[in-house]
Image 1 (cartoon, rainbow, N blue to C red):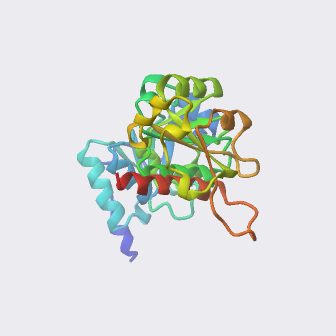
Image 2: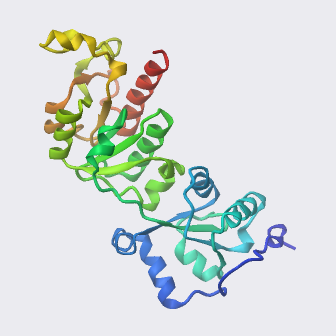
Image 3: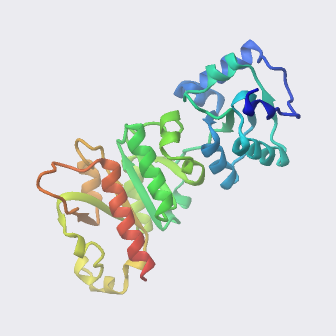
Length: 292
């Protein structure tokens, strides 16, 4: 007898086969168009759903496939049930039409799609901001979002042609941290207004930028106005901009930057991966903040 088969849900609210219309609607959530239309997205597997629970993001529906349920996923199911999340047992055929990974561990959640609309007031109140510009690789964007949460960044701005953050590959690359990150889309005009009107200072990586030992030397020397000497780095908000790996940040973002930063690397390497470069800067800033 299969050891896993003993985990059978006892509070299923639907039959094992989904209605065709319902199934087609759920399958559409695997596309950007479907997610936007239904204002929902999918997340599968124990790790992602544990992160959702950790950040108090509850699914609207939780689908179960009992043969793949183990101790860890069963405990998670019970946690969701205690919070009155509807659980539904579905057939193997339906479950595997909805999931995209080979080992989803018998769990699939349907979540409300958060709004990504730019909110100037909320953005202007953020102390540490990641600006992801034209990051269209799901792995890179997911890794950046994960690092942003890990290094104390409270907002991610998606500028230009970025991959949708609720794309299944992006969600997996975030390891579930997407549930704990606040994100907004932002155009260059909104970015400029945010910098001009809120005092946000933009840091951009550049091969001709300042060496690492000078990254966080803020003071009067950075401004023609000597009164700025009273504005220390810890008193203001900072944004770290990461551009597409092939071309870096746009000329428009570079023109808005408060400081350009150079990452030390071996001459044997032409350039760093976008998510690695961004993560290095975010980590350096996190360490710097912890010493203040």
